[in-house]
Length: 185
Image (cartoon, rainbow, N blue to C red; front, side, top):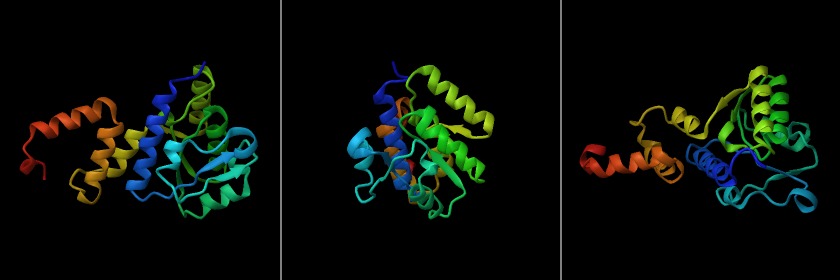
């Protein structure tokens, strides 16, 4: 059993990936022993970043991989948004390690999944107790957009919401259909 459906997690992870792309947020991608163990990065995510080669590591904790940690340090950011396949390992371990190194860490809870509901929930609780901040991908997107008057990212953000935002996306489509185009700008 898994903590949620793969489609829900992939939808959220793809929405998050498109958010990072639209808002020019630096990205670090990684896999674990892609040739021998876990396979390549999920194609929906890789297709958003065709020019970024995932760092293939052997460590369970990405933070313990020198190339991964250097790549994160190279972004010159002190706030991290983390998501990953297994909440209890791929996300929790680097989140806790990054916090120990002074980073402010946000875990995108709906863009992760655990091997079970309990594993996902316990990993989130463990991280929250340590000071990690939980967020959803849409909350992260809207917090970074901040203002609908920000026309530089308005089109990209509303497109992402309509494609990946579930009920919110449907509501946005409906509202835009009901409001004449002249009033939307």
